[in-house]
Length: 82
Image (cartoon, rainbow, N blue to C red; front, side, top):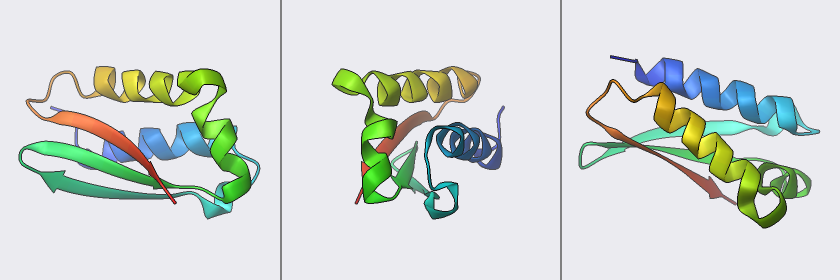
């Protein structure tokens, strides 16, 4: 069973690799109703990089995290917050 910190570390690594300002990336892990929710904060100028054209980049990040946590009973979600 993957640990919350492993999934969080993967998310941080992926996002910091994409953005221009990796020092402004912040990931907050929350647990709600058996689900693990990551709130992702990036600088305003990097939001477009994380979302990608037609949301393809953020969808790919969500799929990777879902696959990484597939052995867990918990659902994993990523929310991009301002």
